[in-house]
Image 1 (spheres, helix red, strand yellow):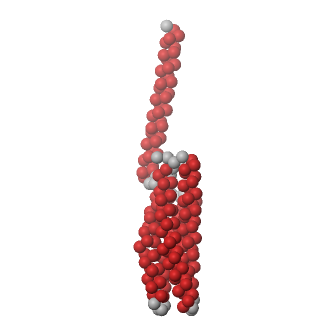
Image 2 (image 1 turned 180 degrees about the horizontal axis):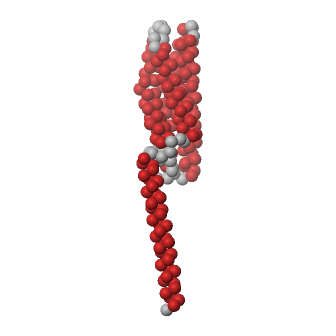
Image 3 (image 1 turned 90 degrees about the horizontal axis):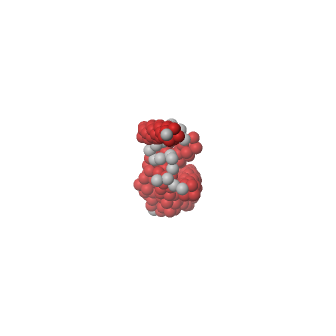
Length: 193
């Protein structure tokens, strides 16, 4: 399945915007976590952690799923393929891993911090509050570099597909040449007969 040019371009715009929003949102989570960790004001800590909860509950998963879905559609609907190029394959698995981590580690961790702060206690696990957004931010920056540089070449599957495509093309070219010779020979026979 190949996407038409307008569909490919629209999907690419959705993917880039979703990924950029996800990256910016994660940077915001890092800033809020740093605020919660470094401030002495209980009110500021509670506000920062509650803001993290709003981001984690309402924005992280929709943006993660949008990025994952549009990236999957782009990989399957363009010449890049999902498992043809190493950089695409790596981005897919990293996106899947960070989406899963956002759902099952980041959100529950932020929820725990909100319950702790709401009960009047200080944030118990400051490292955990900051670690999730920092790991995510690092992964998104790495995926951005992969998207721009497109390193590493083809996977084994991609090499096999390329080699098969080249063999098929060579065979078609040989058949075309052979059929062209037959037409010329047939025309020569008609002229002499």
